[in-house]
Image 1 (cartoon, rainbow over the protein chains, first blue to last red):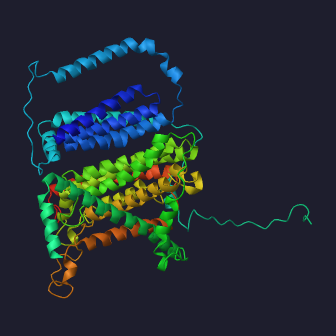
Image 2 (cartoon, chains in turn cyan, green):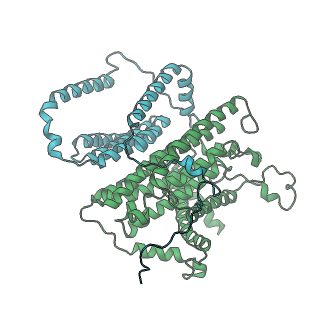
Image 3 (cartoon, rainbow over the protein chains, first blue to last red):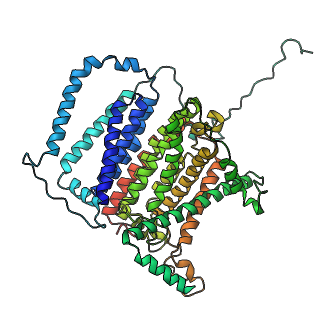
Length: 205
Length: 358
């Protein structure tokens, strides 16, 4: 009973937040609605006893990905007129994508009628560690797909870093290794011997 | 007296179990929150006094004996000040930002074990929960900076966002080291895994990770010398420049609560939490000093106090890092060291190097 109430509340908030993502005029508000959607879906996962997935969703998407998203979106100079310009042009593509998503959702919702069966979910006791089970499965049965995903991510990292590897001429930067290496005896102060020079010009009153 | 107690007991037993659980949880939350707020209040006084002594001056000592009532005077002053809403600020986000800051700072305390089993919510994924909440706390800073519609506040928010994302990775890796050593995400089990004697603390096998964790913690709480988000001399007060009164006090409270949280976590994960440093000293047992070997909340409080003192010490001694230096330290120094240490630790676990990895 309590679980149903929590589910309905979370689901309602999730749907509202998802609608907010696509209807909000301000991109920052849209991004924040997306954060709300992530947090509520994490709550739904907790309700399904998938605490690892729920917490990692908050950790990765809310804590890192959306922060970077907001970082970029907040710096944008928002002009809603230009944003709306291409609406008619992109509408057909949008309809196609929406139709595909709708079909997929329908497939999941009515999968039982289409003959796909899932096992009944089991309630586990409090000591059951979801994280441990997931780790066991990932590193035994699914080790190759998992490693493949890791390699793809690594390629992404290397590609992203390569994009930043261009040096503009004339930038100044410090070399911490050199800075640490200076010692009082050599390098920091250089004493030069030079003969004293006669004063130029007048002595200026 | 005993009769009224018995009557109360009878009333309590007559309540339905769900209500009992709710009341217990609310009671626990109230106790933790009140203790935490008091700790924060006296932390502000301790900070001003200790830094005062470090800088050879007295610090606040006028309100009450030794200045002990100073925090209450400060709170009263802030509470009675007007909360000013800037006319072009985003009202909703402006108000909700300090609430997010303070809520995440307090919510993380739900999984902190104060003594063996004395914990509000003994969940298995405690470590992950803490990480998720600390990463969520950056929203308080970002939202306040953006919603204020002020350039200084916005600069502070941007700096803070980049800094937190960078140091969270190093912090996460340091926690992965703890997870590998203890084979558990449950904070209570992590402390119990360090029992034996002082040599069993994860501090020794994970020394680099401990140092990185603590420095990342300082960066994560936006404390000196990583306080570029506030940077009084550069961007006035950074993300909370537009806040006043209670809203400003909320940010303050959240910052100090986070400091205490980082200290508590460092002592739980690396310094054996509530375990005694003299545990396993058989010479002490049976003598009048035998009580020193017992595990208790007091040890936990002492360890938290040591870390909090370190926070103040850092503030009094170091100049502020420049922004690019912070980024370099996070990405190019801490993350490679943590990754290297995780590999070494994995090898140590496979080779069963004792007394930690048996």
